[in-house]
Length: 353
Image 1 (cartoon, rainbow, N blue to C red):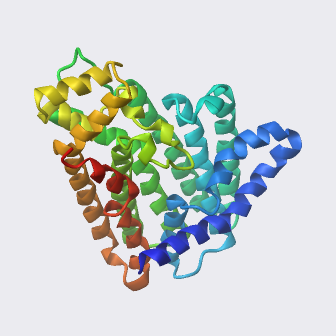
Image 2: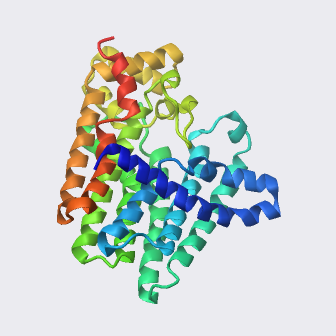
């Protein structure tokens, strides 16, 4: 399937569920227009754009059921995107993202997170109104597990997986923690979306296992790409609906040990390592941060991370072999981001500089 068709289906999915998402937010507008503005800000921005989680849920269902997605599945997709909005609202608080205007009132982000989480639960319940009780409980438990594991990941991210000058870094220990953090904040979400979509599509055990395995590995690759993107300078980074260009270098500023940083601290030269450590200790300015980008691009750390991304994408694709033809193609096209994305293109400008 051509990449353009994939993009078309991605946007189509987003537009189809946009009205459903707004229908759950509209009662808040009647209650308080300012509160509605706060809660609808992120969901509104995403309508008509790329929503990979909704796309994956939709086509997991279609791959297993052999049918076009139904109104119930559209509501399930809306639930997933409302859940994602809830996560992004809280992540803004944890990572100081979103700009001064938004972060000037962090309590509003917390309130929006709680409200959108409840709306997500309502949408999921409605989506499952015609399934048997046992299946509903299974899906609801998996949905709740997404939320729980995400916050375990947030705990690891903001309180454990951090640079500490008192601790000597060990490659195996550090990378294991990094991968556990990734699983919790992102991989688990995709893994469980595969299970939910396949379950709603009445998939076989092998199909459910395959879609869960694809989602888990795809989610890891996606998170690693996001970590690479953190080193794209603001002027070369247009940002996303959730992450502004000014949020560049957020991981450095918060002392997070992502794979490019771990690689440099353990395998880099003393000069490279010392500059990165200086920045992790809070001693940086714009020029130093750009210099770090140059170091990571040219010392092998970004290339190593990209290789790992490709490795997880290869693993993800293997799981799709049980599907044939268009079913497999539609899901496999999600992987194009592993070799063609704006982060990679922007960082190529720093090669050999």
